[in-house]
View (cartoon, rainbow, N blue to C red):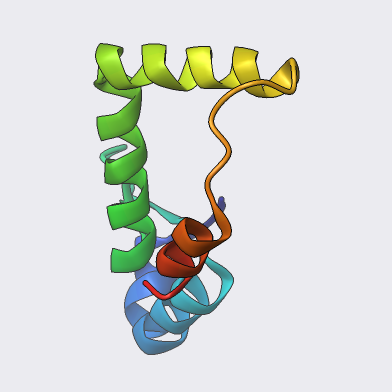
Length: 90
C-alpha cells in the first residue's frame, strides 16, 4: 500500500486513481485530522469481498481442508476428460 496526503490526492486525482486501478495496489490517503481513508479499485474490492465470504464459510473451509488432505495423498476424485472439457468451456 502506498500513501499520499489528501491535498496531493485532490491535486492528482485522475493519476492516483489510474495508478490504483493499474497496479492493483491500495492507496492510503492521510488527512490532518487523522481520519485517513483507502482507495481501491472495484475489481480488487470485489475479490477481497469474495475471499472474506469464503473464509467466513465454515462448511466450505472444511471442504477445502479435506480436499487438500486427499490431494496431498494423491487420492480423491479425478474428473473424466469429458468433464474437464466441459469445465474449461466455461
